[in-house]
Amino acid sequence: MFGLFKKKTEREKLEEKYDKLLKEAYTLSTTNRKMSDQKTYEASEVLKEIDKL
Image (cartoon, rainbow, N blue to C red):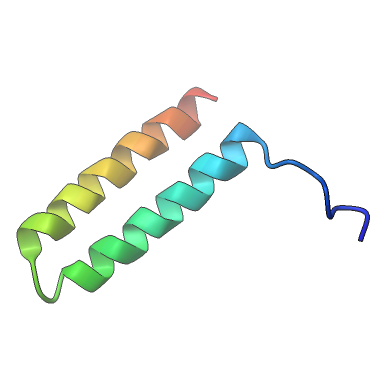
């Protein structure tokens, strides 16, 4: 209850975005390889941003 109004840090937001992109890439890997590769690339860019923090 005390963490109800706690704002997410920039790192938490980026980690959440990274996880989402990897999940999308995995689901696309069975149907559309090009889109899967694009999502994987986007996820790696987000990971670079996380490392900068």
